[in-house]
Image 1: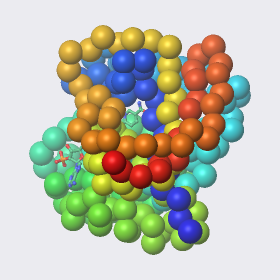
Image 2: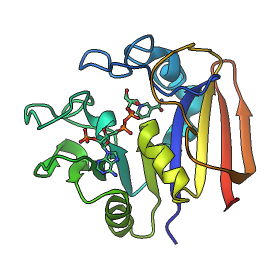
Image 3: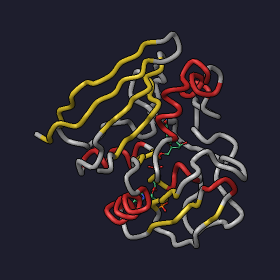
Image 4: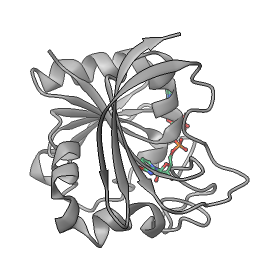
Length: 204
Ligand SMILES: NC(=O)c1ccc[n+]([C@@H]2O[C@H](COP(=O)([O-])OP(=O)(O)OC[C@H]3O[C@@H](n4cnc5c(N)ncnc54)[C@H](OP(=O)(O)O)[C@@H]3O)[C@@H](O)[C@H]2O)c1
């Protein structure tokens, strides 16, 4: 059966991005191009190969438009995401948005499908596309929080970086998700990040 996973890099104070992302600074103010939250992945990748492979193992992905683009409103069709011509997903990616757009086929097996029918439709299409493989909820925090609130995520993998961002804006992980209980099933501590794995038990 398909497991719905979610990997997120998060600061000690619960942020996954800063406010005001731009094309040049995908993670917004303070976080900029993502070094603070993703140095473990970008600069120390070989030390975290298993965790990175775990993210990319999924057979389909769900993400919010904010993870695909900093823009709002009608699409600029010239924008093809932050990952260049060959994104690392190599699978269908279902991008939640209120603005219709034709599928975008990239090199290497990634196709971005833009879903305007809501979260349930995006997850259903991702499950179907993934077959027996996992579905990964890739972010950002708005979509992850919606998935947590709806009890959609079976396995939550937090990559906690030892930094307090001290932001006054931006979306914080777990805001508005209600009460949930998890089983802690994995933890690995390194100097640059602590990997924590939780399985969903039940919503209180
Ligand atoms: N730290 C990490 O691991 C990590 C991971 C992923 C992303 N990020 C960062 O997080 C930031 C984005 O996160 P975010 O929370 O601001 O945004 P997000 O969750 O990526 O996307 C939110 C957007 O998705 C669309 N959306 C969400 N739910 C929808 C629904 N039910 N129906 C239709 N459309 C829906 C809306 O787009 P419309 O504008 O089309 O209405 C909404 O504005 C970026 O800076 C990104 O780089 C960090």
